[in-house]
Structure formats: structure tokens, C-alpha cells
Length: 352
Image (cartoon, rainbow, N blue to C red):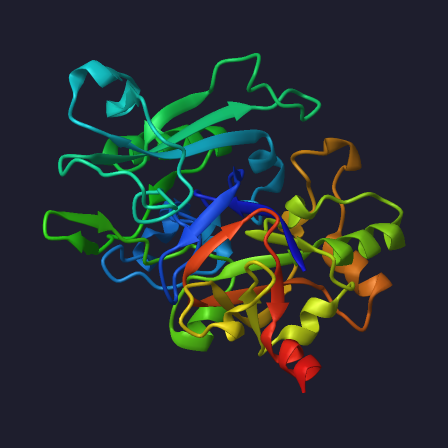
């Protein structure tokens, strides 16, 4: 199967950040900053302990599940940038942010997948969120209008406060932008990074599998295509909020991979050809149950609101209201658009 899309969702419920490549540092981790932040309803703040976070059901948050029409109105840009200490390189912006010469984030620890560049020890990491409102027809306004929020730095208390206040005003209910208190991971004797150790995901599959909230969500484009044909409405795989979209795989074949391992190919070989390689591997742990939160596609407002769970059950009763799978990272590595994944167990069968 071929990787045709890589995406992270830095704020639970808000829009995606599309990537050309992503580096996952190690076992049990996920896409850097995927669902690192969330808009928690203030009435539920006692349920969340930032120092000892646990998985919470999506109904506790302002997200696509609780307010799909509202969240579909906004599109976002999110960047992790490093601001060095040179004043000539930066210009003070709103909410304590800087407009700096920077690199687009796509991995950890410094979003430098090839590890080629050296950083200063005084580098400051900023997590910049910018939000635009779509027009009344759901069309993008990024190129023609000013943002309605940001850039705000979600690495700061001020940035999180501004984000919470903005969405509180929009929904008419108090929400707070929250994140876990992250541990510092040592990179060298002179530098450490802030680890991403809690994900505000929709599933508790990772917790059930290994006590970890962090998962990777995978969608099969061929399954979406068959579903689209069945209901007579074209659907974009992105509406299902995946981290990875794959193609060149039979529809629904991903369900047969539950309990199996995906291995990344490189130069026509897989991890199993070289046990010492650092290619990424993923353990598929569960199917994705769909909710009404994917009833609206922000990028295709013309389709209106679709009852996705009932449509799945009606047209594919043997599948139930499921589409997509969750995986946990067994071995870290780098994914790029165009890379190919194989099921390890099926690969071994072919060789026997």
C-alpha cells in the first residue's frame, strides 16, 4: 500500500496540518504535536489533570463531535518553529510570538528529519496557531482575508488563553485550551526537548493495548471510494481525520490487519530484510468506530451533513459503523509521501 497523505491535527477538533514527511522518534509515540492541545469545556476541567493526564471521552471537549458545524467554519495553520536568539532575525508579533526565519515542522526532536543542521542551545520552540473563518459557502479565505485568531503561541499560557477565549465567545460556552505538562527529554548534554507524551485522541485503543494514549489513525482510500460509490456521494478521505491515508489496497483489507504489523519498505525491501534498520513499524490494534463528527466535510460544504455511521451500517452491515484503523508505533522512523507499507505477516506468508 502507498502513502498518499500525511496529516496531523495539533488542536483536537480543529483543521489539519498537511505534511510531506513526518519523523516519529520512537516506540509508542505519534505524529509530532498531533492532538497535543484540546478545547476542554470549562464544566469538565476537574476531569483533567495536566500533570497526570488520562484519556477523556470526546464529549468533554469542544470538537467536531460536540459542535461539527462550528468547527467546520474554521481552517488553521500550525507551525512548530525555532526562534534563535538573534534580534536581527525576528520581529515581535502578537501574543508573545515572533515572525522569524524558520523551518516548517515535520518531525521530532527538531523537525529536521535528516538531522543535518545544528541548533543553538538558546533556541526557543514556538507552537504557532493561526485561524481563518471560511465564507458562508465553506470556501477558504486564507488567501484573501486576515486571520480571525493569531498567530498565537500555544507553547505559552497567553497563547492558550487567547485561543480558549476566542472559541468560548464563538460557542457561547466557556472552554479552556489545555495540554499535558510535558516531560523534558534529553537530546544532548546541552539541550533537551519537550516531549509529546499525551494525545487527546478519540480512541482509548492505545490505552487498552499498552496504557498509552498516543495512536496513529490510518484510512484506506479504496474503502472510502467504495463507500462513496455505495451512497452516490463523493467523499474525501480527509473528512475522517486520518494521520495516514493509503491507497493500492483492497477495500476493507485494513480490517484484516487488526493484530498485525505494518512495515515500511525502502528501496524495494522491508524492515524484515534488515532487522538492524531504523524503518518505522506500526501495530494495528483496532477498527475506528465512526461518529456524527465526520458528518460534515469542511473542504466540501456542498455535500451537506451526512449521517455517516448509519450510512455505513446500511450499506455495509457486515462492517458496522466502522471505517479506518488505529495503530501504535512499534519502531520509530520517517514516513514520506509515496512510501509503501506492507503487512509483515502477509509478507512472510508469500515467502513461505
